[in-house]
Structure formats: structure tokens, C-alpha cells
Length: 526
Image (cartoon, rainbow, N blue to C red; front, side):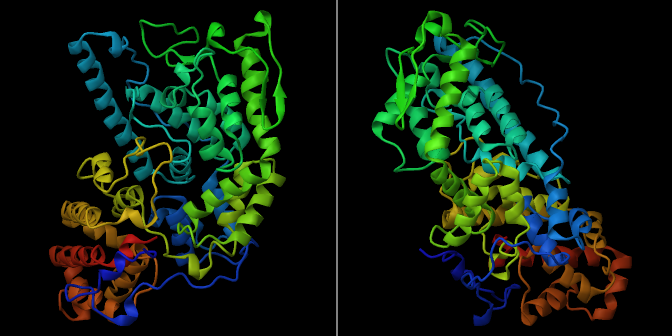
């Protein structure tokens, strides 16, 4: 199935999507640009493109802050200074219960029911952060890394305490632009990760290989870069770590904090990727020394021996998320340039992201409007653009489109790409967007139009709305429909000012434009 082949059957019809063979969405054109910086000031279309990729959708306010700036100035502003104020957390993040596995059925159901409630609340909390975010842009990068270092709310053991998912989300948000090697070290001992991949079950008598395998295969260097023996040795390194999850179990470092259990740790020598980790005795089998000399050493070894593979693996993942998702469409020359830059900067994430987002390649016309919106982008993005609170539960809406925040289908995350739109999910997209538009008051619709400088000019307002909601310019016949049939409701152009003064008819026209947009194939692209 080729990119957007599902979208190809969505033709422009008489309800506002005028059928025209020239109006089909083309395949991505050939590229001739590289990572060299684009130095010209950003146009409005380029500002919208940058915001579609580094946030969940552009807002007029954010676009106004970066139009006319150079890409370097705009990107540095969007990435921020790194001293962001932490968002106010949900109120229940420190609530702790007994272990439901050992409780009676009534108590277990009560605890797990509360976890489900708190999990839904956590998803709503994060969705609101995404929807209301201004500058700097924090949440899109947080969501990217959350889909890389995955943990599930619902998995083999039952449910993940949402308190641990919150703490993992906080770690990811704080690490999003930091050092990737340190990120890998921190996530290795993250409480949610230890629970999710069986680290809390990992003992010297029964080593659990899950995390050791995924650390190399999915989180750092990729398939083919390690042996089964390396996985077994990594599992031994990782023995003995626990999480203070319950009030009837040990929690020496505090609630929901990771701690070390010396009797469960394999203190013998290990060898990973041909490099040794020395044995230890009782005196050195301590939390600090095992973390420093084994956990951190394990990650250091992987980065030292497989640094080139890590740089390519992560660069490719970043490219596919921020530039073009097709597995066959990745530009290998750009990937190599990104990987080289990543290694040269000692695996610092910020220089890699910054260089990519301000490059000529990023702003190449062939890379604009070629990504299928993920459910998160679709749900959060449209609400952002309309400045409208979610009408239905945001998490439920995303889940109906087959992306459940903090609960991916497996440790690999979401396959994404063309699978985001199917005969099952497409109607749910339309239903969500229709409900959001239908819930807008006349005043909200007119306020939406008034964000644009030339809102009193019907033709210019229509063009502004097209540019804001659709990633590529539309052909003349579509523009004519949006203007005459939708916005003006078949009234002459000179009547627009009177419609605005009257209010209701103008609001009806703006709503009709939005309803026409959501029926268009390119509305699903960014």
C-alpha cells in the first residue's frame, strides 16, 4: 500500500470537494536540499509548516511570533531555553494503595477501578497541556519520546499505576532535548519501565531478559547489533531493581521511587558486546555503586561499541516523525548527515533537532503536507486551531482512531504511517471534527475569523482559512467553492460586511467552510 493510498479514494465532490483530476494529492516530489540552514525569513506558510511539525498544529498567535524571523531564530524560540516551568500535576500522583494482587476481589476491583479513573484523568491532563501550549513547544517532543521509550497502562501484569506513568512522563518531558545517553540511563531505572518490562521481577536466580533486549533492539541501536549472549549478560547487570509501588511493600527511597535489593543482584562479572563489567563483593554490592559501575556502565558500553548504529537508528526515527514517515521515503543521505552530527555532539538531542528543523531540507516544498496526521495531531491540533475545548473526551477520541496515549499496542509503539487512516478510523475522524465544529457558538466562529487581519474581505478570509487549516495551496475551483458556496452562502461578495454585522449568517458561512475542509483529503495531512 503506497503512501496515502487510502486517501486517494476520497475525491472532491459536490458538497465542497470539487472533483478534479489535478486536485489529487501527489506523491512526494524529488528533493535536492540538505541539512544546510535556510537563511531567509519565514513566510506565513513556512511558519505554519514549522508549527505543524514541532507542535500539534499552528495557532495564529504562535505564527505571528515567528513569521519574519529566520528559521534559526524561530526554532530556538520554539525549543526554548530549557528552564521551563513544570506543569501543575494531577492531585492524585502521590496516592498509594496496597498491592491489589494480594487483596480480596472487592479491594482489588476498587484499586484497579481507581487506577483506570486516574489514567483517564492523566490522558486528559496531557491532552490539555498539548491543546493550550504556547511557546516554547514542549509537548510534541515529549510525545515523540514517549512513543520511543514506551510503557503501557494495560499490559500482561494488569494495570500500570498511573502515578508511575506520570513520573515517566515528567522524566521524558525534562529529558526531551538533553543528552540521549543520559536519557537512556535514566529511563533504565524509571519505575514505570521497570514494572512494564519485568525489571521488578529480575533476580539473579531468574534473570528477566525483556529490558536488556529492548534497550538494544528498540531504544538504542536496533536489530542486528547484539547477540543473544549480550541480552543474557545485560539481564544479569539489571538484576535487583525494584519500585516502591504499594503501602504494604518496601519503599526505602519513598513512594513510587526506584530502589536496589542487594540479595537479588547478580554480583558476578559480566561481558556485554565484548567489554567486561567486573564482579563485586558484599561491600560494593550497593545501590550507588551498582548504578554507577553496572547500570551506567552497561549503557556506556552500548554507546561506545554501537555509537554509529545508535546515531543512525535515532536519526532515522526522528526523521520519520518530523519529516516523512514512509519507510521507503527516508533520505539516507540526510540520515547519515544527522547521525554524524549526533555523534559529533556527544549524543546531545537539541543540536540534532535544531539543525533538522531549520534546514533547507525541512522547508523543502516536497516535505510540506506529506505527513498523515496522527490521531493525537488530529484531535489536539483541530481543537488548538479552533481555540475550542474538547467536546468529547480527548483520550477516548484518540483511542477511537487507534492511538491511546501512554498505552501503545506493544513495546514497539505504534506502526503509524498509512495505518493511521482506515475504513474503521476515518469515520471517527469525521465524527470528532464535526462534533467540535457543531459545538462552536456563533461568537466563537466569528472570533476565529477575526484572528486574521483581512477578515472583512471575504476572498482574503477564505484564503487565510485555507492556508491555516490545509497544508498546501488549493486550486482555483476549490477556492471558488469555499468562498462562494460555503462562506458567502451564494451571496455576492459585497454582502460579506453586512453578514458580519448581522452575525448569524457570517457564522453560518464560517461553519460551512470548516465543514467543507474536514471532508477534504488534505485536511488529514500536515
